[in-house]
Length: 623
Image (cartoon, rainbow, N blue to C red; front, side, top):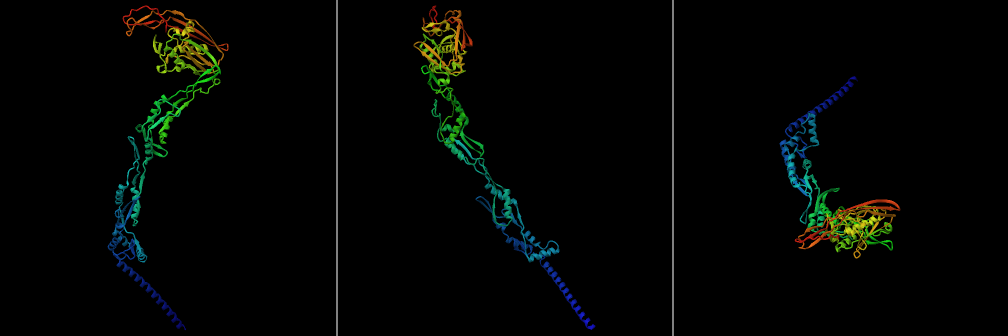
């Protein structure tokens, strides 16, 4: 039994050993076979690319680097045959990648494929070889991109794309408006475009590359609207008129198209919207024109003139008030500029209007003109026709005139210019120490009458000038008699040097009325107002310290005939006169004043023709 059992165990052990030996042999054999295969593969592909390797999808396994390079060069045609489209709006440029600097290096590409499975340690190399054989290995071709070539190509395109900024231009050629529109400046951004080109060509795909172009708009792109405005301004003459109801010499004022063209101003201005052209008429030229026009168009406000109706004790309108007007140069300038923009070619001037203190609707109650407060009549017997004419002309300036309460009245201001154009004639006047013929002789009859009306009315006298010598006209009374007590109560006015002034020191307006009666040789001056209870007392010294006149003076006048003698000045005795006035108000002394006058002795003067025997005539005083 033991022998049999031992034999069985022995047989089983031998079988196991055989099996293990067989397995070991199989493993060793397989390993040897694998190594043999690897060795064969390594030997077989020693100078060739391992199987499964591709370059850009082109199988190159089993090929030598030279063969692979040839195949790669033949099949990768993108650099030479590909198309890259460069686009700028509607402009297109088609170039091959090679024209843009992309070149294929087939040798380097083959070498890169040849290196698959040959880098790293043995296990890595074997793994790469197996993976290439089993799954495939695609390598990228070696491309060279020379940006300098692309840069040169883009520069050639830039020469077509680039253009400078052109500003809109607006000007005149005579009366013709010349306009040129602006243009947007364009510049190819080469660096930005180069980056886009590089990315496209290295993708090995055809495509469209939008070029990067920087646009620079002009400050003023379009001046067509301003040009149209300029054409409308010059389309017809400009007429400046007065407002409705107003009048003035020289109106209207017309600027023809040629003048308007010379005045047209085209300027660049900046506003919230940026810069633009502004078309206007030259402001300086318009201001100069309007400023010269303004004085002639100015009207000073004048109170309405009235006469006091003694029956109704109301005011009757004698002359309507004059509304003052002043040309508003700035407002007119704006009206012209704005009007032209609105296609207006007839534009009224702009005035500032000022009402006078007293308008036509004033009443006796509102002005305090309720009664006659002073009146005086002077006489001008023996006056020449010319002297009477001057008295009438001067007196008319004051008829219906109002003096405000508290105001100082200037006779010279009210008289204005004494000239032939204003209705005056030549008559005898005292100038420069002699009596000569001049315009306005006799006006002193008016000033003397006003002086006495103010004097006897109790109004303060501010300025009064006596004549150089005693003039008989101013001492005459009714019936052509002489009253020496009137000496020292004359007043002379010689505009604008010598004036007569008095003050209306009451709270009421004062209305003047003047009446000239040539037939009776009288000038009557009336003051209407409201009495404040003042009365006047006055005394005069009469002419004292009398000085006899010099002997007559004879002067030869070659314009006179032989035997002809003409008296040109009359003698008057010199004298001094002192007049004292006391003004009472409600029985109390209000004020007292003293008027002193010194008259010069005056020499009679005669002119005679050559060869005339000089007589000794009795001197006359005929003023």
